[in-house]
Image (cartoon, rainbow, N blue to C red; front, top):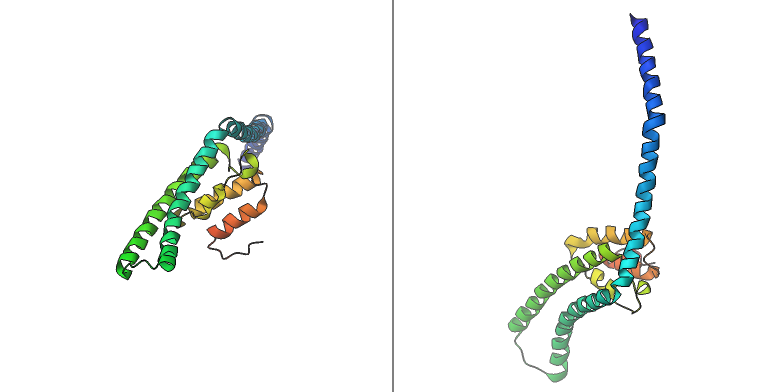
Length: 186
């Protein structure tokens, strides 16, 4: 009885090996080839779509950068006017105003980061080398709120692997900010 069960196990093993070699292996290889071609095709589509929608992307990035910087300029403006022109404002009013501006900036940073994530997923990272007009898209990810930093880092690593950062210093600078300015810059 034992001899028979060993023999049937051997024949099952032969059948499984035969199945793996003739059916499953070609299927797995075919899927791998399809997926690798699909990834390359997706990258080519992103590049083509970016060229097609370039003016829209540039305009959107310019809007994001403007909203990012306008509010920050308010904080600097008050400080410089107060120092230069001797404007009188009590410290309680100033602190309330400053805290309000900071809270607004956090919301703007979150919204801008989400928008740039969407743009990056659709077109790839819009590095200046990929567009006809120089842009400051990196400044948006530089100001990424804490709760989005891991997500942005993963996206940027993938974008770097795809070769969408011609200027590696830009990537390193963004990552330096995302890491809390703690890692070595170069």
